[in-house]
Image (cartoon, rainbow, N blue to C red):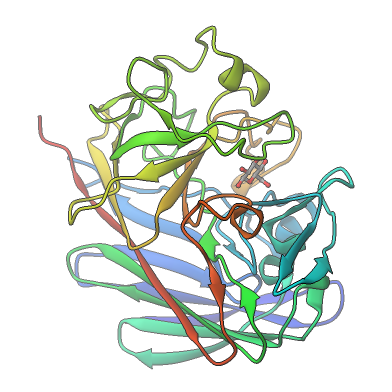
Length: 345
Ligand code: BGC
């Protein structure tokens, strides 16, 4: 079932709509057209109690004023591009350096802050679309983006991304939901598995050095599930420079989940599936409680964890990473699934 409501008007006067997808189990997902954003996901715990497991805002003003990409679709290039530049076939492109004037973060924020068009495709899905003009944030090509959200009866939320450019360009799309499976507090006792033998360490700008470092014997080893907080304070130069986890994990190939997280107390669990090579684990390290989220609740450090499925950061400047350059007319397609359930151990 899908319902639609008005979600107010942006500062620039554009109307924003909120769509709610609901399945027969009572699980529901709120999507807003500003940023093609997931604004709520309500799932039951082991006693059947529902909680909203993503961070967000009650109003469009909240999203415009306080957002750190909560729930938003991110592109054209999710994550960072060093020095805000890259080249294709000998032409260098100068991008918006929206992070401290030195890096291009999340494609300059363009897709996340645009109002998308939405159509209800059937009883279970909404497709949102946005056309980015040639040269937006410095990137080449007019690109037509679509993001389709489908809620299944098994409580899986599937996100299908597609993009087609009229010029050769780079594409990296993700969703920046901050999950908290308890629906409150911080996520340090949440237990997490990431199916990755390596991660990409970074320099002080959070740009990968190029090394694919084995997680074995480091605080980055999530191959066997462990609480997120167990090693977060370890004496590790990488963890210290980012105040915790803010790193890309190089996913192992295979059909199983890329990641699984659960809250031991409520039993709520989430599995993540993706066809992309990486996932960024970020835990709201830089949030400091000064911004109000839903119900005015302060967005505190570690209030949620993001699992941003992606190409590795700075891929356009890293020829040895799995590549994300697409020819004119070539379709970028990718899917990520967040499936909710219960952990019964
Ligand atoms: C980045 C963080 C950043 C956050 C919010 C994440 O994807 O890795 O460094 O603070 O997005 O912009």
